[in-house]
Length: 638
Ligand SMILES: [Zn+2]
Ligand SMILES: [Zn+2]
Image (cartoon, rainbow, N blue to C red; front, side):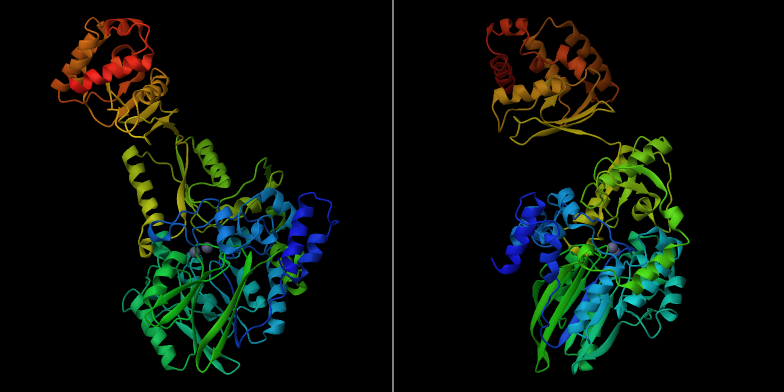
């Protein structure tokens, strides 16, 4: 443990209520958090996906972030303790709070809000003091995500970016302000100040470049190229009508040509400022030669250390720098004899309490907010629990939104996109209009009410899952699963047929999907479990409401009835059912779904605790599972 780590532990201990140090210790001890010694001769500062957040906020990192295929269990698909272990971050520390959701509410109260452009500006200035030549790069998704960004068509962020000293950026949500607006900014506000770099957007007609693909600069005598890569799926993930004349894509081969071109022009460091998303960047890095680092965004992953990816040309660093202005990355390269010899990387959390607001930026922010301040502060409610968004499958703020949609639109089910932007509210905080807009501020905020079949809903959900979890990253579009309200199901553990067999019950619709545990007038074979286990599973299903309709994995009803009659030849309900099934099948209909109530009277496997049944099998007084085992055994031989 070095001195800094020792102080962090002290700070965490005091936060946890241990009387080791007085209040204010966290602030004092953290003063050196931002001392990043300069290294080498080429310096890059990078932030990404700030999503219009000019003021400090809370932002909870995800507790669920699944990787599929090769990506499972590797950065950026690590959360919580696994994340801390992998990156060697001590639990309970300031960094643990910045990078994970562990103990979020308590830690957020201790360490305070993150981000805010006035605080970010102070940090940029501090780092530039030792690195005057450093380039400041913005990975995009800056002009969208807040009420003021929406109401000013991104102007608040455009002005703030200029004041912050951004040298270059690329884009994604910027395009949802429309192609004309983007062009207006690039050719107006940004001209001679900020380079909007995009190698992968071409005109749809002749394939001409729409933006400058790269810029070249020199630092301490070293020529550097920054290549821009916008979000390749913009017209798919967002409405195409915003960019009708432009064509997007990963454009790997064109990227290789651009890299070769800038190398040909003498660039000794080549950096891709990317909005691909980290999984896409990891694959890209393995296939394109000549890139020293991909400074990535879009997937909002706060990754403390770059992934180093080998390719035919050498090695490429791949990073992702979080979102909402919460992090600033410092990448120092030591370039010797025309190529990168070594590097240092640090992803610094921007703790507003540790970085005083820079006054010129604070003034700009209050100026852009002042016409709207009254509206922004409108208090809609106070939240009792924490409201957050990030996570592969759901977030509490999204739950609030879909619940609201169902109530307002009188809908049975509501869907809301799995956006990764949006801030976090702690219990007891007011939900102001501004906070609500932090989750919903988009240029296409339509809510529609439709009738959809279950089949359509299933197709939609599977399609979204494919976008998120396709094992080939080039087919992933970022974001999380669409949020679903009103489709509440219960998973019931029903082992026996297989050891891991589960069933689903949807209480609102009184529907159950029981797989191969229960069949109509039958049950599944006991393969991986034992009869007692299977009997317990059947009891769980038998305990569902009588009017529950269930769907099983196979329709064996007719054959099952023939067997059931050998167990209970005098069961009148069974005889009536046999007649009904005969008619259904005769008319070419299915006998499924059946109801739990009917099965209780007719299905011998659900009647193993019936004294008459036990007696007729010569097992009077035996435990029900033994009677069940005997019926199952007879059926196996039937
Ligand atoms: Zn984003
Ligand atoms: Zn994005």
